[in-house]
Length: 258
Image 1 (cartoon, rainbow, N blue to C red):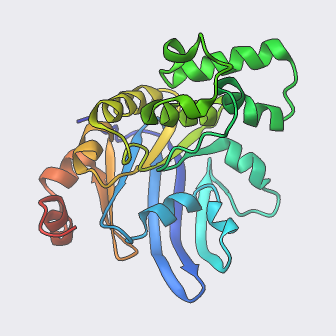
Image 2 (cartoon, rainbow, N blue to C red):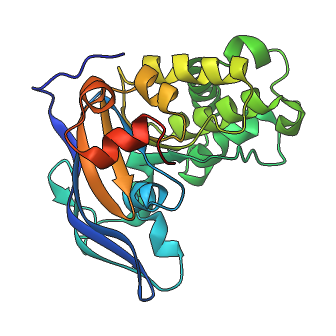
C-alpha cells in the first residue's frame, strides 16, 4: 500500500462542490483535495456520485444537458470555471481515461497523434517522437512499435485501454482522471494497468474511480469514500481500510453493503 506524504502540494481541490442534473442532486457539498504526484482513489457503491465528481474536474459534465454546479474547483489555485478559462486547454491539462476503452477506428499511430494534430502539431518528426514517448509512457511501445499503421481495433482489450492512456498522455496533461480504467479487463491486463498507474504518478497527479477495493488499496496513497452523493470520509488509504473514522466507511470496506 503506497504511503501518503502529508506535505504534498495540492494540485486540484473542490470546495463545497454541489452538482445537479436538473433538480436531482448527484454530488452534495464535496470538499476534497488532490495532492500532487499522488493517486487518490474514489470508492463507493454504484450511483454514489464518484464518477460525476470525477467528470466535474475537467468540466465534462458541461456536456450533459441540465447539469449545473455550485461551489468551486481549483487547479493550481485558479477556479476552472473562471470566465477566462479555456475549456479546451483545461481538458488538455486535466486528461481523462474512461471505463470502456474507446480507440478511434484509425491506426495505432493516429490514435495517439489525434489530439496533437487537433492542437496544431504538423511536424512529422515531432509527432513521431511524441507518439513513441506516449506509447512508452503507457507501457505499450514494445508491443506495437512494429505495427503502428495497423488498426487500433485489432488490439486486445488491455492493449486498447493502454492505448487510450497513451492518447491521454500525448497531450502532456498535468492531472490524469481515470474512471474505472480496469473494470472491463482480465486480471493480467488489470495488473499491467495498476503497475502503469504506480509509475505514472511520478509525473502526474491521478484520481481514479474504482469499484475494486483491493485495487484502491494497491495503487492509491489517499482514498475518498462517497455515499449517496456525499463525501463521507477521506484520508490515507491505509487508515480508510484499517481504521476508518466513520461507521459507514467501515461497513462498506468490510463488505457489509456495496
